Length: 198
Image (cartoon, rainbow, N blue to C red; front, side):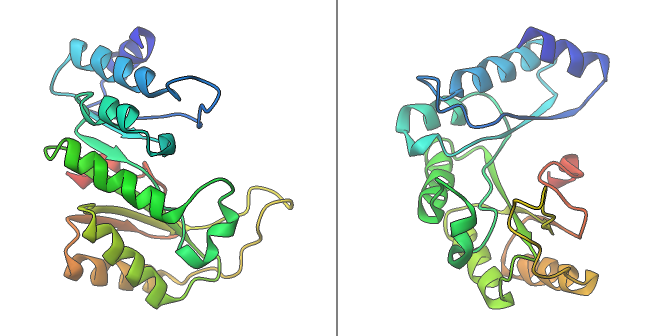
């Protein structure tokens, strides 16, 4: 944690996004590492904004409490895609991910919650709008939308390359629905322009 905090200081970052792979092999699934890194950064400068991008921690209450009360201003957990296409997310569950986002906000109403999705997997516009409403219903008002790109030939193939005007449609519709900020473009990823969300 101290090395990450020192790196943040050297790079003169004012907004740091901290993430990790899922660590199901650890008893705390990595939750305490998120806590330690956040505290180390805040020790260097309490005004540096910290955003955590977390796995679902299997929705374990104690682990969600650890990250929700870590001192981070934003906690992100990505839905990735619409419920109908969740077979591409091995070991993940759409409703559980929504519960995680809802519980984080209940534990600490002062944090902002954030999620991200990929499009181009065969989803319908109406499904994306329904997903947006699901996020709003659990208090999540920050969203990233980007184009899915298959990492390899073994991964789920791209079904469609979404046109820029559709990304703009998603952003306009979402903002009208009640989101505080949406990044939506082919190149958008979870941490893209992260400092602009607040």
